[in-house]
Length: 483
Ligand code: NAD
Image (tube, rainbow, N blue to C red):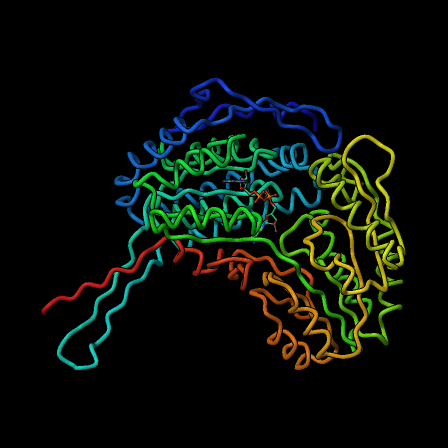
């Protein structure tokens, strides 16, 4: 492994099957969060480039939507195989630009590729219906058609998977796309564009548009009447802004937004299993995941024992750059993110939380922060209102199941939640009472391309993965005909 993988990736805008410089020559640097070193200089799309990308996607749209579903499916299947064959190379790029650990990066490549396989299988299942009209004299026919040119906007925390989770269903449905990746991690997206083209995706079907001027480029596309769909993954704050902009043209919107996942441990839980699940739910991706356990809500009788076991597990993790597979936890994405995490921890500690392990940024290059466990957190101290997005586990103790559910639901977010109980019926009951789109019952790992992923409340609209993910890129048309 080395920095050579970066040299193999195109660093211009990928429009209409070609790499092109930004219209005004603007570029921006992409840095390695583990070292601070600049990895590459990438073209920064202008508003003019955004229009060019929409033109390329529009020009390719008619041929792609009329390409037989089986042919689209086979291209997606070849794309899946290409990703798996190049797993280590893609993982290396992900580590370099996002800072995650080697096992998280290789896990992400597999997860990302699986969306292409799943939607290769779903491409041939855009089913319609025939229903006898209730009056008995007519038939109601429905067919599903691709929604049209789609703008995809993705975050930095899963540079490959957030792309394929949208590109897979869009292409399966017959839509062409412009992908605007996060500016911290555009290289993986550019590699993905190249890889899809090599696997047979026709020019213009997938365009990749890195830009430091996200507001201007995305805004331009959302105002363009040729665009019909916005699929966004990122913060609730930006999501809200984009929904307002999408209202201008009544765009079809799918929104995967922020989370603040509760992790409930009831007093009959197997504590070792709960800690094992907690380590996955908290530490996958170094805590930088929208479904990361963000608030540990533990019944009082087991709270101190759970906290001690979790602190021992968190304290045993090795911090270091992800290119060394021996390191468990990489840096957070950038300096601002680390400062925010450090400020949240010190405010909570000043308010009376106990720091059982971690609580410091180690003195070394890169944006590292120690895996941290805070116990006896006061639910009112403000920490629980924040999506921490880092390796910090705050623990609150509660008297009973009702209080656990009340605290779990005391948030505007509703993406994921976790419940541990020795009694499955009790776990399911609590799971049903928590207002979230994804509930792990005695499980800390819930992501699966075959499962519907998405949030309630201000965590979003729509679902990705499963058959639902395909439907997000299809529209239902009702044909009323006299037979
Ligand atoms: P972000 O909202 O800052 O950015 C997301 C994307 O939007 C990036 O491509 C960014 O360049 C772009 N963007 C930013 N401002 C914009 C603007 N004004 N107009 C148009 N585009 C703009 O989020 P982030 O920091 O990249 O990612 C972290 C957030 O994403 C967290 O809140 C996390 O929970 C969320 N997330 C959600 C899911 C999910 O499936 N629900 C998955 C991963 C991450």
